[in-house]
Image (cartoon, rainbow, N blue to C red):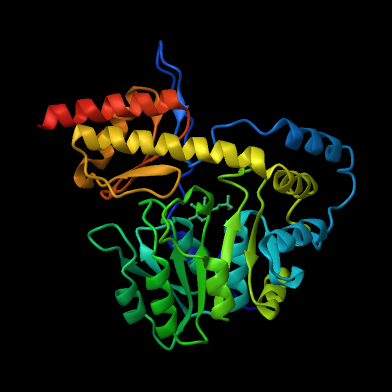
Length: 363
Ligand SMILES: *Cc1c(COP(=O)(O)O)cnc(C)c1O
């Protein structure tokens, strides 16, 4: 018998993964309601109509869910004006992203993405055995598309474009994205991650479905986690050219999108008007927070998402700590900055108080 390690050893790549740091529940502070504004969650409780459907569906959880996500895919296809065959669902859009990597990448292939961007990108890339190629954002916290183009090599299989970008809130303009795609080799898959699409108000933002019609190497990634408030149920989807969507269905965890998630996503599509009102209120709250911060003297990148970005550099950890002491959990990113979700107005008010004092102390 050949001799090997004394214990079963997981792939070495696992040890090199950046640890995913989940948003912690805030530590209690006497006299203050704690708020967690670190995970870009929707602060509204589930809609009654959605909850009712989930409760009813719960009576059937002794059965497997529909593996083909048929009803959900049909509803999405009709709403988006694409073919049912173009839709692939997954356990959150992070799940779909994993399916994309499994479908596209061999060991040694490269995946290009902006950085700083979504924390999951380097993780799903490395898990697939591919090499992450992060490309620094511009000084304006935006995707540097020319530099990303320059990072594409013969090993590049996938390019990830996050618009609006998590955590900076900036978007990639439609015209720039089209020029970029004109120059990307046609065999390289470009994923447009639109987790925050519903919060976008800028007229120059990309019309990704129209782009996907014009460029057959484009996949659009969306989620029910943020605007739809279903983060706890895990359901996202891709709109892709049919052969690719088929590959994404083939690389999905079988029955991954569970019975309750499918029911809730369908019910959410039916309640879209009610959900849109909530999204509008969150956008108005974002604008209130941004305006107040500007009056305080902060110069932050304009956000098109449900969060704001404080590029605090070396002060990142200190700012997050001050927030924590006021029972407000924000998300610090190394020495880059702090991301704060737009949630309950009381949480925003507390953030504004902290931000005002921070500036006053440094004026
Ligand atoms: C939150 C987020 C997602 C979606 O996550 P789910 O797995 O759908 O909950 C995808 N992309 C980005 C950039 C995000 O911030």
